[in-house]
Amino acid sequence: MTERRLYILVEGNDDERFFGRIILPLISHRYRSVRLIKYACLKSARVCKFIQSIRRTGDEYLVVTDIDQAPGVMAKKQVILDRFCVVNPGAVMVIIQEIESWYLAGLGPSDARILGVSVPDSTDHLTKEEFNRTIPSQYVSRIAYMLEILSRFSIPEACRKNRSFQYFMGRHHIAPPARSLPETGELKDQGEPES
Image (cartoon, rainbow, N blue to C red):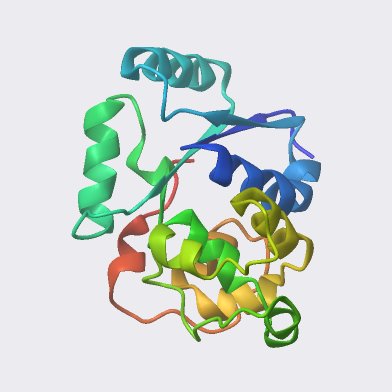
């Protein structure tokens, strides 16, 4: 364990729920503390000041963002860099397509059958709207459905079905990659964090 703290800046509630349930338990032993901060509704100046204070203390941070409609990883990173001018490009993690693609990627075939859900072999291009269409009628809320997926979440399955999830896990040495990444392409542009 290091004496450093880690701050993971996430866009909203769905990201916070995912990182809190899946990622934090796997990395919390490495840091004095790990905190999730929702930044989407915060003013840019406030986030910039917060990141500056993290850097001054020598702690670590990661800014997580969905690629959304950006034409590529580097373009989305530039959006974040323009919004938060103090962010190190290597500290930005772009989720392809949206966080919902990571949720659905972790649902294995047997659990998908139990829930009555059809999960594609790859969730790399899955959008929030497509995810919402998978919600079975027995779930009264989207959140209940997401929590059920997280309770059944398979990291190897998610690494197999979503390249950006696999990249994130490998980059942070959380789990061995389920398959090797291509030599070229979007994910290679994610970059390495500044040491």
